[in-house]
Image 1 (cartoon, rainbow, N blue to C red):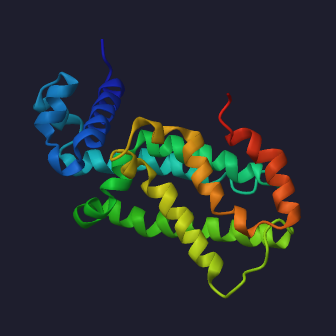
Image 2: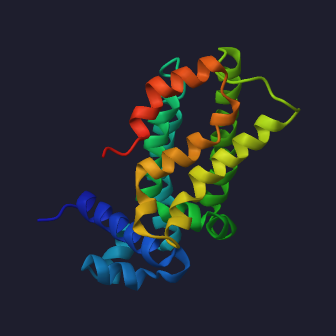
Image 3: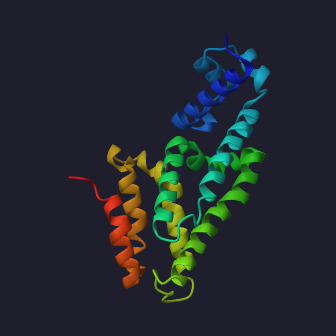
Length: 212
């Protein structure tokens, strides 16, 4: 017999699947209930409206993002960022609606607006600090001009954030994690020092090279 906890998670899993498939704006409680195989009344007992479902999903999303952000500077080399990219890739695969619908959700749902204001700056700032850290340890060159690494951090954030969305417009090959990582790392290559390039060739290149 299904418990209340199991039913609530089933509702969230179903809602997330529908949000990912057709977008948050196109999903109603009836759609979620039908897909989950329960009555609308049963769904409303657990979540009174769509906003309550979005609130619960954003709590789940925040837990995962906290885990990703907490992996910053675990290792004192480029492996640190590569492993974090793996986590971002899996996050994007799990929650494509988060990136494609965040602006719209922030206009409609208070939890999404607060989340955007709290986490989007943190994601960008962490990338920016990572660039500074690698300059300090001699793997990245100092900025050639003021603001260059601000722009690089923004470009990196855009790739990480909008990869799942743009993949919907392309062939299935673009969903490969190696393709994603190569695109991110390609923006670092012109800025490596000799030390940085040696570390990249030793630690990262073997990980992002397609076998065969």
